[in-house]
Image (cartoon, rainbow, N blue to C red; front, side):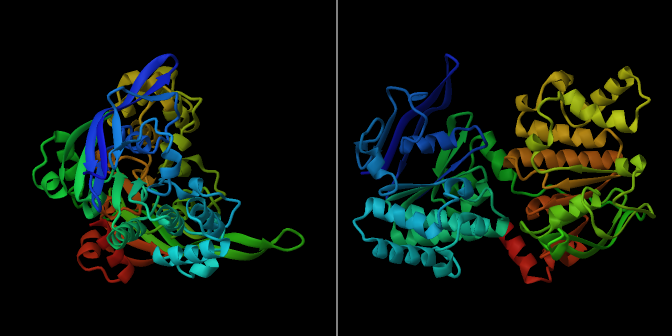
Length: 524
Protein backbone atom coordinates (compact mmCIF):
# COMPACT_ATOMS: atom_id res chain seq x y z
CA UNK A 1 0.00 0.00 0.00
CA UNK A 2 1.19 3.53 -0.80
CA UNK A 3 2.03 5.74 2.16
CA UNK A 4 0.12 8.63 0.58
CA UNK A 5 -2.37 8.55 -2.28
CA UNK A 6 -3.74 11.77 -3.76
CA UNK A 7 -6.49 11.13 -6.31
CA UNK A 8 -8.51 13.58 -8.43
CA UNK A 9 -7.73 16.42 -6.01
CA UNK A 10 -9.40 19.69 -6.94
CA UNK A 11 -8.81 22.82 -4.86
CA UNK A 12 -11.06 25.85 -5.29
CA UNK A 13 -11.78 29.15 -3.57
CA UNK A 14 -14.98 31.19 -3.24
CA UNK A 15 -14.15 34.77 -4.21
CA UNK A 16 -16.79 37.50 -4.31
CA UNK A 17 -19.53 35.01 -5.07
CA UNK A 18 -17.51 33.30 -7.80
CA UNK A 19 -15.56 30.05 -7.73
CA UNK A 20 -11.90 29.96 -8.69
CA UNK A 21 -10.07 26.63 -9.21
CA UNK A 22 -6.43 26.70 -8.09
CA UNK A 23 -5.74 23.01 -8.77
CA UNK A 24 -7.71 20.50 -10.86
CA UNK A 25 -7.79 16.70 -10.77
CA UNK A 26 -4.29 16.22 -9.31
CA UNK A 27 -3.25 12.60 -8.70
CA UNK A 28 0.01 11.12 -7.40
CA UNK A 29 1.32 8.57 -4.90
CA UNK A 30 4.15 8.56 -2.38
CA UNK A 31 5.87 5.47 -1.02
CA UNK A 32 7.78 5.10 2.25
CA UNK A 33 11.25 6.65 1.99
CA UNK A 34 10.52 8.19 -1.42
CA UNK A 35 11.24 11.80 -2.39
CA UNK A 36 8.69 13.44 -4.70
CA UNK A 37 9.45 16.75 -6.36
CA UNK A 38 6.58 19.06 -7.31
CA UNK A 39 7.70 21.70 -9.81
CA UNK A 40 5.96 24.70 -11.36
CA UNK A 41 5.95 28.48 -11.49
CA UNK A 42 4.06 30.76 -9.10
CA UNK A 43 0.31 30.18 -9.36
CA UNK A 44 0.67 26.65 -10.73
CA UNK A 45 -1.11 25.11 -7.74
CA UNK A 46 1.91 23.52 -6.02
CA UNK A 47 1.40 25.00 -2.57
CA UNK A 48 -2.40 24.63 -2.40
CA UNK A 49 -1.98 20.96 -3.31
CA UNK A 50 0.50 20.48 -0.46
CA UNK A 51 -1.55 22.50 2.05
CA UNK A 52 -4.60 20.35 1.22
CA UNK A 53 -2.81 17.25 2.56
CA UNK A 54 -2.85 18.67 6.09
CA UNK A 55 -6.07 20.66 5.72
CA UNK A 56 -4.28 23.99 6.12
CA UNK A 57 -6.38 25.92 3.58
CA UNK A 58 -8.82 28.65 4.70
CA UNK A 59 -11.98 26.52 4.80
CA UNK A 60 -14.88 27.12 4.08
CA UNK A 61 -13.59 29.76 1.67
CA UNK A 62 -11.52 26.95 0.20
CA UNK A 63 -13.24 23.78 -0.99
CA UNK A 64 -12.61 20.42 -2.66
CA UNK A 65 -14.68 18.61 -5.27
CA UNK A 66 -16.69 15.54 -4.12
CA UNK A 67 -14.29 13.30 -6.07
CA UNK A 68 -11.19 14.65 -4.29
CA UNK A 69 -9.36 12.13 -2.13
CA UNK A 70 -6.19 12.24 0.01
CA UNK A 71 -5.39 8.96 1.79
CA UNK A 72 -2.64 8.41 4.36
CA UNK A 73 -2.12 4.70 5.09
CA UNK A 74 -5.49 4.20 3.40
CA UNK A 75 -7.27 6.64 5.74
CA UNK A 76 -9.10 9.56 4.09
CA UNK A 77 -7.74 12.92 5.30
CA UNK A 78 -10.22 15.33 3.73
CA UNK A 79 -12.68 16.44 6.47
CA UNK A 80 -10.95 14.10 8.93
CA UNK A 81 -11.23 15.20 12.58
CA UNK A 82 -7.90 13.47 13.36
CA UNK A 83 -5.92 15.85 11.18
CA UNK A 84 -4.75 18.09 14.08
CA UNK A 85 -3.13 15.05 15.71
CA UNK A 86 -1.38 14.06 12.49
CA UNK A 87 0.07 17.53 11.90
CA UNK A 88 3.60 17.73 13.23
CA UNK A 89 3.62 14.10 14.31
CA UNK A 90 3.00 11.87 11.30
CA UNK A 91 3.12 14.57 8.61
CA UNK A 92 5.19 17.74 9.02
CA UNK A 93 5.43 20.93 6.99
CA UNK A 94 8.34 23.32 6.30
CA UNK A 95 7.28 26.71 4.96
CA UNK A 96 9.15 28.99 2.58
CA UNK A 97 10.02 31.88 4.89
CA UNK A 98 11.16 30.69 8.35
CA UNK A 99 11.21 34.18 9.88
CA UNK A 100 7.44 34.49 9.39
CA UNK A 101 6.87 30.95 10.74
CA UNK A 102 8.89 31.27 13.96
CA UNK A 103 7.62 33.23 16.95
CA UNK A 104 9.85 36.32 17.26
CA UNK A 105 9.16 36.62 21.01
CA UNK A 106 10.31 33.12 22.01
CA UNK A 107 13.75 31.55 22.02
CA UNK A 108 14.18 28.81 19.46
CA UNK A 109 14.94 26.18 22.12
CA UNK A 110 11.55 26.80 23.70
CA UNK A 111 9.73 26.68 20.37
CA UNK A 112 11.22 23.30 19.42
CA UNK A 113 10.68 21.85 22.92
CA UNK A 114 7.01 22.89 22.83
CA UNK A 115 6.59 21.07 19.51
CA UNK A 116 8.03 17.92 21.09
CA UNK A 117 5.94 18.10 24.27
CA UNK A 118 2.77 18.69 22.26
CA UNK A 119 3.04 15.27 20.62
CA UNK A 120 5.20 13.24 23.03
CA UNK A 121 4.82 12.43 26.72
CA UNK A 122 8.15 13.96 27.75
CA UNK A 123 9.20 16.18 30.63
CA UNK A 124 10.49 19.71 29.99
CA UNK A 125 14.06 18.57 30.72
CA UNK A 126 13.81 15.61 28.36
CA UNK A 127 12.31 17.80 25.64
CA UNK A 128 15.16 20.30 26.00
CA UNK A 129 17.70 17.48 25.73
CA UNK A 130 15.99 16.24 22.57
CA UNK A 131 15.95 19.82 21.23
CA UNK A 132 19.72 20.03 21.63
CA UNK A 133 20.13 16.73 19.79
CA UNK A 134 17.92 17.98 16.94
CA UNK A 135 19.87 21.23 16.56
CA UNK A 136 23.10 19.23 16.41
CA UNK A 137 21.55 16.81 13.90
CA UNK A 138 20.53 19.67 11.60
CA UNK A 139 24.01 21.18 11.72
CA UNK A 140 23.40 24.29 13.82
CA UNK A 141 26.82 25.53 15.07
CA UNK A 142 27.15 26.10 18.83
CA UNK A 143 23.81 24.35 19.30
CA UNK A 144 23.62 24.81 23.08
CA UNK A 145 24.10 28.57 22.83
CA UNK A 146 21.71 28.83 19.90
CA UNK A 147 18.90 27.35 22.03
CA UNK A 148 18.82 30.71 23.85
CA UNK A 149 18.77 32.76 20.65
CA UNK A 150 15.74 34.50 19.17
CA UNK A 151 14.89 33.98 15.46
CA UNK A 152 16.19 37.41 14.41
CA UNK A 153 19.59 36.56 15.87
CA UNK A 154 20.10 33.69 13.41
CA UNK A 155 21.06 33.75 9.74
CA UNK A 156 18.57 32.70 7.06
CA UNK A 157 20.19 29.29 6.70
CA UNK A 158 20.21 28.74 10.47
CA UNK A 159 16.52 29.70 10.73
CA UNK A 160 15.66 27.19 8.02
CA UNK A 161 17.62 24.51 9.90
CA UNK A 162 15.57 25.35 13.01
CA UNK A 163 12.39 24.88 10.97
CA UNK A 164 13.68 21.51 9.77
CA UNK A 165 14.51 20.54 13.37
CA UNK A 166 10.94 21.37 14.42
CA UNK A 167 9.53 19.44 11.46
CA UNK A 168 11.46 16.23 12.23
CA UNK A 169 11.15 16.53 16.02
CA UNK A 170 8.44 13.88 16.22
CA UNK A 171 9.94 11.59 13.56
CA UNK A 172 7.23 12.09 10.92
CA UNK A 173 6.60 9.63 8.14
CA UNK A 174 6.14 12.43 5.59
CA UNK A 175 7.95 15.77 5.45
CA UNK A 176 6.48 18.42 3.12
CA UNK A 177 9.00 21.13 2.22
CA UNK A 178 7.31 24.04 0.41
CA UNK A 179 9.97 26.16 -1.35
CA UNK A 180 12.32 25.72 1.65
CA UNK A 181 15.33 27.29 -0.09
CA UNK A 182 13.84 30.10 -2.20
CA UNK A 183 14.84 32.87 0.23
CA UNK A 184 18.39 31.52 0.68
CA UNK A 185 21.72 32.09 -1.07
CA UNK A 186 22.83 29.46 -3.55
CA UNK A 187 25.48 27.93 -1.26
CA UNK A 188 23.01 27.74 1.64
CA UNK A 189 20.43 26.20 -0.71
CA UNK A 190 22.86 23.40 -1.48
CA UNK A 191 23.53 22.85 2.24
CA UNK A 192 19.80 22.63 3.06
CA UNK A 193 19.17 20.15 0.21
CA UNK A 194 22.11 18.00 1.35
CA UNK A 195 20.76 18.14 4.91
CA UNK A 196 17.30 16.96 3.80
CA UNK A 197 18.83 14.09 1.82
CA UNK A 198 20.94 12.99 4.81
CA UNK A 199 17.98 13.21 7.21
CA UNK A 200 15.79 11.24 4.82
CA UNK A 201 18.38 8.46 4.72
CA UNK A 202 18.81 8.41 8.51
CA UNK A 203 15.10 8.54 9.36
CA UNK A 204 13.60 6.75 6.37
CA UNK A 205 10.86 9.34 5.97
CA UNK A 206 9.22 10.29 2.69
CA UNK A 207 9.61 13.88 1.43
CA UNK A 208 7.50 16.08 -0.83
CA UNK A 209 9.85 18.80 -2.06
CA UNK A 210 8.14 21.76 -3.75
CA UNK A 211 10.03 24.29 -5.87
CA UNK A 212 9.94 26.38 -9.04
CA UNK A 213 13.59 25.42 -9.61
CA UNK A 214 13.76 22.15 -11.54
CA UNK A 215 17.54 22.05 -11.22
CA UNK A 216 17.25 22.02 -7.43
CA UNK A 217 14.57 19.31 -7.52
CA UNK A 218 16.82 17.18 -9.74
CA UNK A 219 19.35 16.97 -6.90
CA UNK A 220 16.92 15.54 -4.37
CA UNK A 221 13.88 13.86 -5.98
CA UNK A 222 13.30 10.24 -7.03
CA UNK A 223 10.30 11.25 -9.14
CA UNK A 224 8.82 14.54 -10.30
CA UNK A 225 5.43 15.97 -11.17
CA UNK A 226 5.26 19.20 -13.18
CA UNK A 227 2.34 21.58 -12.64
CA UNK A 228 1.12 24.57 -14.63
CA UNK A 229 -2.04 26.65 -14.31
CA UNK A 230 -3.44 24.32 -11.66
CA UNK A 231 -2.98 21.14 -13.69
CA UNK A 232 -0.53 18.25 -13.62
CA UNK A 233 1.02 18.31 -17.08
CA UNK A 234 3.78 15.70 -16.73
CA UNK A 235 5.07 13.13 -14.24
CA UNK A 236 7.72 10.45 -14.10
CA UNK A 237 11.02 9.42 -12.57
CA UNK A 238 13.63 12.15 -12.34
CA UNK A 239 15.78 10.36 -14.91
CA UNK A 240 12.94 10.11 -17.42
CA UNK A 241 11.80 13.71 -16.93
CA UNK A 242 15.28 14.98 -17.76
CA UNK A 243 16.18 12.52 -20.51
CA UNK A 244 12.81 12.38 -22.30
CA UNK A 245 10.54 15.31 -21.36
CA UNK A 246 7.26 15.22 -23.30
CA UNK A 247 5.62 18.56 -22.49
CA UNK A 248 6.95 21.79 -24.01
CA UNK A 249 6.74 23.56 -20.65
CA UNK A 250 8.90 20.85 -19.05
CA UNK A 251 11.40 21.22 -21.89
CA UNK A 252 11.43 24.97 -21.27
CA UNK A 253 12.13 24.46 -17.56
CA UNK A 254 15.00 22.08 -18.34
CA UNK A 255 16.53 24.36 -20.97
CA UNK A 256 16.44 27.25 -18.50
CA UNK A 257 19.40 25.66 -16.66
CA UNK A 258 21.64 26.32 -19.61
CA UNK A 259 23.05 29.82 -19.30
CA UNK A 260 22.43 32.15 -22.21
CA UNK A 261 25.35 32.56 -24.56
CA UNK A 262 27.26 35.66 -23.57
CA UNK A 263 28.62 37.52 -26.59
CA UNK A 264 31.86 39.31 -25.75
CA UNK A 265 31.70 43.09 -26.16
CA UNK A 266 34.91 44.94 -27.08
CA UNK A 267 35.06 48.60 -26.09
CA UNK A 268 37.91 50.50 -24.46
CA UNK A 269 35.97 53.63 -23.43
CA UNK A 270 35.77 53.73 -19.61
CA UNK A 271 32.40 55.14 -18.50
CA UNK A 272 32.59 54.36 -14.76
CA UNK A 273 35.55 54.22 -12.42
CA UNK A 274 35.28 53.51 -8.69
CA UNK A 275 38.32 54.01 -6.44
CA UNK A 276 38.61 52.81 -2.82
CA UNK A 277 34.87 53.06 -2.17
CA UNK A 278 33.81 52.32 1.42
CA UNK A 279 30.46 52.44 3.18
CA UNK A 280 30.19 52.47 6.96
CA UNK A 281 27.11 52.32 9.18
CA UNK A 282 27.15 53.55 12.81
CA UNK A 283 26.56 50.83 15.41
CA UNK A 284 26.76 52.85 18.62
CA UNK A 285 26.48 56.50 19.66
CA UNK A 286 27.84 58.71 22.44
CA UNK A 287 25.78 60.81 24.82
CA UNK A 288 25.55 63.61 22.25
CA UNK A 289 24.23 61.31 19.55
CA UNK A 290 27.43 61.18 17.55
CA UNK A 291 28.53 57.78 16.18
CA UNK A 292 31.22 56.00 18.23
CA UNK A 293 31.64 52.70 16.38
CA UNK A 294 30.95 51.64 12.81
CA UNK A 295 30.26 48.54 10.75
CA UNK A 296 32.07 48.55 7.41
CA UNK A 297 29.69 47.10 4.82
CA UNK A 298 31.88 47.92 1.82
CA UNK A 299 35.64 48.12 2.30
CA UNK A 300 37.83 49.96 -0.23
CA UNK A 301 36.34 48.50 -3.42
CA UNK A 302 37.77 49.58 -6.78
CA UNK A 303 36.74 48.74 -10.34
CA UNK A 304 36.24 50.24 -13.80
CA UNK A 305 33.54 49.62 -16.39
CA UNK A 306 33.71 50.09 -20.16
CA UNK A 307 30.87 51.22 -22.42
CA UNK A 308 28.61 48.38 -23.54
CA UNK A 309 30.14 45.89 -21.11
CA UNK A 310 28.92 44.18 -17.95
CA UNK A 311 30.59 43.81 -14.58
CA UNK A 312 28.95 40.96 -12.69
CA UNK A 313 29.18 41.18 -8.89
CA UNK A 314 28.35 37.92 -7.13
CA UNK A 315 28.21 37.00 -3.46
CA UNK A 316 25.98 35.84 -0.64
CA UNK A 317 23.55 37.99 1.34
CA UNK A 318 25.47 40.33 3.60
CA UNK A 319 28.53 40.46 1.34
CA UNK A 320 27.95 44.15 0.57
CA UNK A 321 26.68 43.85 -3.03
CA UNK A 322 23.49 45.89 -2.65
CA UNK A 323 25.19 48.47 -0.43
CA UNK A 324 27.79 48.94 -3.17
CA UNK A 325 24.99 49.39 -5.72
CA UNK A 326 23.30 52.07 -3.61
CA UNK A 327 26.60 53.89 -3.13
CA UNK A 328 27.47 53.90 -6.85
CA UNK A 329 23.94 55.20 -7.50
CA UNK A 330 24.67 57.90 -4.88
CA UNK A 331 21.63 56.90 -2.85
CA UNK A 332 23.69 56.54 0.36
CA UNK A 333 26.82 58.35 1.64
CA UNK A 334 30.22 56.78 0.92
CA UNK A 335 33.95 57.34 1.19
CA UNK A 336 36.23 57.13 -1.85
CA UNK A 337 35.82 58.43 -5.37
CA UNK A 338 33.45 57.73 -8.26
CA UNK A 339 34.24 58.98 -11.78
CA UNK A 340 31.70 59.13 -14.60
CA UNK A 341 33.50 59.40 -17.96
CA UNK A 342 36.51 60.85 -16.16
CA UNK A 343 34.54 63.42 -14.14
CA UNK A 344 34.28 62.92 -10.40
CA UNK A 345 30.75 62.77 -9.03
CA UNK A 346 30.04 63.25 -5.33
CA UNK A 347 27.20 62.12 -3.09
CA UNK A 348 25.85 65.62 -2.54
CA UNK A 349 26.22 66.69 -6.21
CA UNK A 350 22.93 68.22 -7.38
CA UNK A 351 23.74 67.88 -11.09
CA UNK A 352 20.67 66.25 -12.70
CA UNK A 353 22.60 65.28 -15.80
CA UNK A 354 25.03 63.15 -13.78
CA UNK A 355 22.21 61.49 -11.85
CA UNK A 356 20.34 60.73 -15.08
CA UNK A 357 23.28 58.84 -16.53
CA UNK A 358 23.34 56.22 -13.73
CA UNK A 359 20.04 54.41 -13.15
CA UNK A 360 19.18 51.44 -10.91
CA UNK A 361 16.73 48.53 -11.17
CA UNK A 362 15.88 46.92 -7.83
CA UNK A 363 15.24 43.32 -6.83
CA UNK A 364 11.52 43.41 -6.07
CA UNK A 365 9.57 45.46 -8.63
CA UNK A 366 6.35 45.33 -6.60
CA UNK A 367 7.98 47.25 -3.77
CA UNK A 368 9.85 49.66 -6.06
CA UNK A 369 6.79 50.71 -8.10
CA UNK A 370 4.28 53.21 -6.72
CA UNK A 371 0.96 51.29 -6.39
CA UNK A 372 -1.03 54.52 -6.89
CA UNK A 373 0.54 55.34 -10.26
CA UNK A 374 -0.25 53.80 -13.65
CA UNK A 375 2.48 52.22 -15.79
CA UNK A 376 2.61 55.37 -17.97
CA UNK A 377 2.99 57.64 -14.91
CA UNK A 378 5.70 55.42 -13.40
CA UNK A 379 7.72 55.20 -16.61
CA UNK A 380 7.26 58.84 -17.56
CA UNK A 381 8.04 60.33 -14.15
CA UNK A 382 11.76 60.66 -14.93
CA UNK A 383 10.99 62.62 -18.10
CA UNK A 384 9.30 65.35 -16.02
CA UNK A 385 12.54 65.77 -14.06
CA UNK A 386 15.18 65.34 -16.77
CA UNK A 387 13.31 66.46 -19.91
CA UNK A 388 10.82 69.06 -18.61
CA UNK A 389 10.47 70.80 -21.99
CA UNK A 390 8.84 67.81 -23.68
CA UNK A 391 5.19 68.22 -24.65
CA UNK A 392 2.64 65.75 -23.37
CA UNK A 393 2.49 64.17 -26.85
CA UNK A 394 6.28 63.81 -27.05
CA UNK A 395 6.37 62.32 -23.56
CA UNK A 396 3.70 59.75 -24.46
CA UNK A 397 5.59 58.82 -27.64
CA UNK A 398 8.72 58.12 -25.60
CA UNK A 399 6.72 56.02 -23.14
CA UNK A 400 5.19 53.95 -25.94
CA UNK A 401 8.59 53.48 -27.57
CA UNK A 402 10.26 52.18 -24.40
CA UNK A 403 7.25 49.95 -23.61
CA UNK A 404 7.74 48.26 -26.97
CA UNK A 405 11.47 47.97 -26.28
CA UNK A 406 10.86 46.01 -23.06
CA UNK A 407 8.23 43.79 -24.66
CA UNK A 408 5.00 45.30 -23.31
CA UNK A 409 1.96 46.31 -25.35
CA UNK A 410 0.48 49.81 -25.55
CA UNK A 411 -2.61 48.57 -23.67
CA UNK A 412 -0.55 48.37 -20.46
CA UNK A 413 -0.09 52.14 -20.07
CA UNK A 414 -3.18 52.71 -17.95
CA UNK A 415 -2.82 49.63 -15.74
CA UNK A 416 -1.51 49.68 -12.16
CA UNK A 417 1.31 47.54 -10.66
CA UNK A 418 -1.05 45.04 -8.99
CA UNK A 419 -2.55 44.21 -12.40
CA UNK A 420 0.76 42.89 -13.75
CA UNK A 421 2.69 39.67 -13.25
CA UNK A 422 6.11 39.76 -11.55
CA UNK A 423 7.91 39.61 -14.89
CA UNK A 424 5.79 42.42 -16.35
CA UNK A 425 6.44 44.60 -13.29
CA UNK A 426 10.18 44.11 -13.70
CA UNK A 427 9.89 45.11 -17.37
CA UNK A 428 8.17 48.32 -16.23
CA UNK A 429 11.00 48.97 -13.76
CA UNK A 430 13.54 48.49 -16.55
CA UNK A 431 11.54 50.81 -18.84
CA UNK A 432 11.48 53.47 -16.10
CA UNK A 433 15.28 53.35 -15.92
CA UNK A 434 15.82 53.30 -19.69
CA UNK A 435 13.52 56.17 -20.65
CA UNK A 436 15.93 58.83 -19.37
CA UNK A 437 18.66 57.39 -21.63
CA UNK A 438 21.28 56.38 -19.03
CA UNK A 439 24.82 55.31 -19.87
CA UNK A 440 25.06 52.92 -16.90
CA UNK A 441 22.37 50.61 -15.55
CA UNK A 442 22.84 49.06 -12.11
CA UNK A 443 20.84 45.84 -11.83
CA UNK A 444 20.51 44.77 -8.19
CA UNK A 445 19.25 41.14 -8.19
CA UNK A 446 16.72 41.95 -10.96
CA UNK A 447 15.65 38.32 -11.46
CA UNK A 448 15.86 36.71 -8.00
CA UNK A 449 12.20 37.41 -7.14
CA UNK A 450 10.99 35.80 -10.39
CA UNK A 451 10.20 32.26 -11.53
CA UNK A 452 13.01 30.52 -13.40
CA UNK A 453 11.33 30.77 -16.84
CA UNK A 454 10.64 34.50 -16.31
CA UNK A 455 14.25 34.97 -15.20
CA UNK A 456 15.45 33.75 -18.59
CA UNK A 457 13.06 36.11 -20.39
CA UNK A 458 14.36 39.12 -18.42
CA UNK A 459 18.00 38.11 -18.99
CA UNK A 460 17.37 37.82 -22.74
CA UNK A 461 15.69 41.23 -22.67
CA UNK A 462 18.69 42.78 -20.89
CA UNK A 463 21.06 41.22 -23.43
CA UNK A 464 19.04 42.68 -26.30
CA UNK A 465 18.81 46.14 -24.72
CA UNK A 466 22.55 46.23 -24.09
CA UNK A 467 23.28 45.26 -27.69
CA UNK A 468 20.95 47.92 -29.10
CA UNK A 469 21.85 50.78 -26.73
CA UNK A 470 25.54 49.98 -26.08
CA UNK A 471 24.82 50.60 -22.40
CA UNK A 472 27.06 49.46 -19.53
CA UNK A 473 25.71 47.22 -16.75
CA UNK A 474 26.69 46.54 -13.16
CA UNK A 475 24.83 43.27 -12.65
CA UNK A 476 24.49 42.09 -9.05
CA UNK A 477 23.32 38.59 -8.14
CA UNK A 478 23.96 35.51 -6.01
CA UNK A 479 23.01 33.34 -9.01
CA UNK A 480 26.17 32.27 -10.81
CA UNK A 481 24.31 31.09 -13.93
CA UNK A 482 22.64 34.48 -14.33
CA UNK A 483 25.97 36.22 -13.76
CA UNK A 484 27.63 34.02 -16.40
CA UNK A 485 24.97 34.83 -19.00
CA UNK A 486 25.57 38.61 -18.95
CA UNK A 487 29.02 39.37 -17.59
CA UNK A 488 32.26 40.24 -19.34
CA UNK A 489 34.07 40.52 -16.00
CA UNK A 490 33.06 38.94 -12.70
CA UNK A 491 33.92 40.22 -9.23
CA UNK A 492 33.32 37.87 -6.29
CA UNK A 493 32.37 39.80 -3.16
CA UNK A 494 32.69 38.60 0.42
CA UNK A 495 32.70 40.49 3.72
CA UNK A 496 32.60 43.87 2.01
CA UNK A 497 35.43 43.52 -0.50
CA UNK A 498 36.31 41.80 -3.78
CA UNK A 499 38.18 38.55 -3.13
CA UNK A 500 38.49 37.71 -6.84
CA UNK A 501 38.00 39.68 -10.07
CA UNK A 502 38.72 38.41 -13.58
CA UNK A 503 37.18 37.84 -17.04
CA UNK A 504 34.02 35.72 -16.78
CA UNK A 505 35.45 32.65 -18.53
CA UNK A 506 38.53 32.70 -16.31
CA UNK A 507 36.46 32.86 -13.11
CA UNK A 508 34.37 29.85 -14.15
CA UNK A 509 37.17 27.76 -15.66
CA UNK A 510 39.99 28.60 -13.24
CA UNK A 511 38.55 30.04 -9.99
CA UNK A 512 41.33 30.98 -7.58
CA UNK A 513 39.40 31.25 -4.31
CA UNK A 514 37.74 28.37 -2.43
CA UNK A 515 34.65 30.53 -1.88
CA UNK A 516 34.31 31.08 -5.64
CA UNK A 517 34.60 27.34 -6.26
CA UNK A 518 31.82 26.73 -3.70
CA UNK A 519 29.54 29.26 -5.44
CA UNK A 520 30.12 27.64 -8.83
CA UNK A 521 29.63 24.11 -7.47
CA UNK A 522 26.37 25.08 -5.75
CA UNK A 523 25.00 26.56 -9.00
CA UNK A 524 25.60 23.42 -11.10
